[in-house]
Length: 217
Image 1 (cartoon, rainbow, N blue to C red):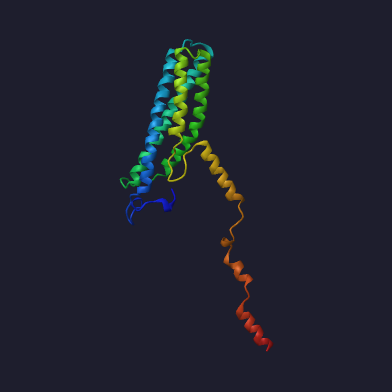
Image 2: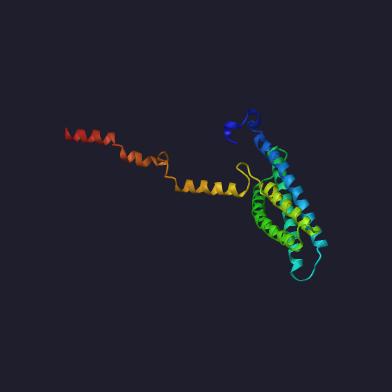
């Protein structure tokens, strides 16, 4: 949201700690993080059910159900971290708390980065269970439910790291950020930003000209 898009009731008065524009942003993101949290609970429950009911517990077959449980449980933790971060920010931006958000922002950003590794590990584990057990078996149905819930939880909740502005941490958003940084790096310098000393050195010194004229006369 740009500055010109703020309504008068969204701009805090001088000396007032509440920031209505940021409060509105937090209230818009919190429900989506809660949806992701619920999906992560569903994915974790499905993975635990797979681990408890998987037909074979010998050799490699026990590894991937455990990987699925670990990945989905950590995804649930990350969604909970994002929900807690936005709730803490809501209190600060509404003037209810004076806590600093620097550490919370760092933790939230790192958590959303870790969620990409977790979703890949969980997808691989659940796809292995699905391929090994078959689509028609109870483990296959649970694997499908867990897989869809895990991907949705990461895309809806885990990537919404705490920030004051800008898009969430999805891959297209990160690609746009990198392209914008590259354009700014390759852009020519703005002539307006050139130092004043260069302009002054290019202009003739009127005092020097007048002195020279007097000498010639």
